[in-house]
Image (cartoon, rainbow, N blue to C red; front, side, top):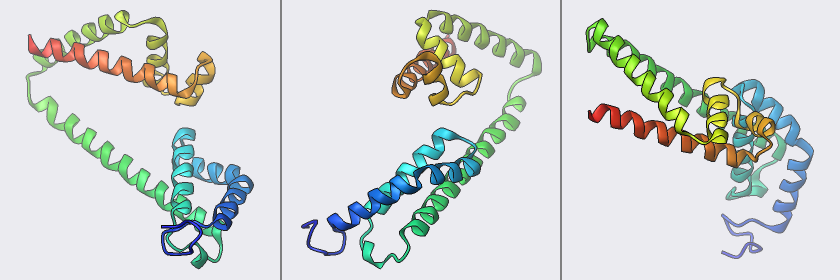
Length: 180
């Protein structure tokens, strides 16, 4: 479809300009609003970006009376979806934690856990220093990617790369241990 045609699904130059102005004017407020709800700066940034994309791809942007209110409502709905997803994930983890102890006798579980811990320590020792540092800061200390990036003087993308690389390495080591 022609972006200037005004047909459903099209984005006129006027709509794009209105949305750009809206983003410039309300970005900080939107991210602060989302951070309060999500308790995560990186999640807040992700949800804000997703809300902007949704606003940009509106089928009938001229039908929206108050773009700011619509933006905040869209972001709020996306944040609620993220919180629900977190809740479902937490329940699943809790379920596994409740069932797993029943699977093996206590001394055997302790021995398996100790073996895994030793294996993971060895796997972490095999990582390059930057990869290990990024992994420990994010996964163990619980720091957001942006905080780790600033501390390590790297881009957030590189921190994500290092953490992903460390996770893959550790997963491969755990898989090797379980094959024995």
